[in-house]
Length: 134
Length: 193
Image (cartoon, rainbow over all chains, first blue to last red; front, side, top):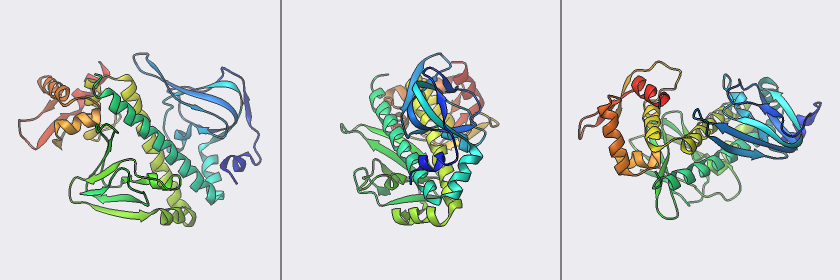
């Protein structure tokens, strides 16, 4: 069974229309979101007002997982790009799911590691390309 | 000592009990970048848990005599099943690492190399933005290594280090083994840039 199927048990997804905001940079991180169907973009703005797209998430992806760390703030803003149905879980609800379904913890850790590998690749690209640029 | 090198098959991951480890990546053209400097309680080589026949995407080298545990991929996955508490602890550590990586990426996307160096020096002193700021003495690092962490050239690092010293943000003597990072002054310099 997949993580999203487990989460869907006994829960109804939230429906969002294009252009709505799931969460904003600087807010307290209170929930993790799983996209059943749709598309969400994560953007971040620097104190000087420069904007960058950190990631685009699609069906079966999750986002906002920093809420599990406790006392963390959103470092990006999540905007819905097309009509989407999304499951939202608070920190405790998510930890409960992982507790009740041990196989899910493994799946979730591995998806987080995949994310980590992707982030490292992007960081390396930046480090290599900037090295002689400025 | 090299623990594993980029391109090798990856079968196990590592936890640092004591010591220090540097994680580096080389580009196809031979340029080098430092991805992380790790210490006690940190882990590395976790990429082995992702995908099938995974190869190391980086090289790990110990920088001083260190005590390091090696755990095979299968043992690690079994531990997730057998000990939910362990899975949860590891999950939190991976989350924290991802948040850190996202911050590093934003730093690269938004900031110029001088500001990035200031941030790297602050991180070396291991002080987060919300903790008490003080003068911290840390072992010196070669300008070449700093260049590989910041993503710039050694000559630019030299210019910035001299400038930071003149501004009183850091203190060091030529050839000395230690450098004093004046965390408060350095933080102010970053915030008011």
